[in-house]
Image 1 (tube, rainbow, N blue to C red):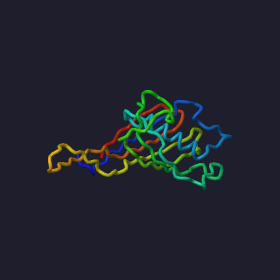
Image 2: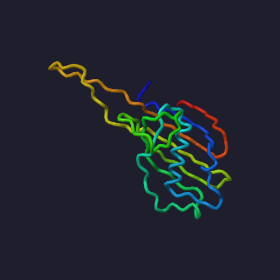
Image 3: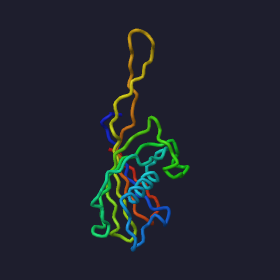
Image 4: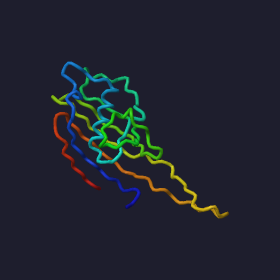
Length: 167
């Protein structure tokens, strides 16, 4: 498979917990919306290990009352916890060689249920060199990195309906 080849994973995921849906009288902070987006991403990513928030780009202009559709931008990293364990992300340590993904999208409360659209791309990391022998002539090999692009679209209140499309 070519290293430049991208995979697009499109998932429609529903909120599993009614508490995750904001009431019409409550607006979410940027941090709460990002946490919800990371949870949805973990539910629908189809991967073994869960991801945890590594960094969220600040959005001082975040105002759900003035504009019910707001932009999200954050970075996640793979953890040691399995998705099936369904543990809170704060309880999971990052994997030493965990995949890092830059994510962007939007959070909207224009509908009855909140809508989260997130697209995450694997961050290109420096190749890891592994020394295979102690001979004077050094031999270096490249450790392959998982690359890809994943998009997640979620609307609260619906069951997960995965749709996978490879490019």
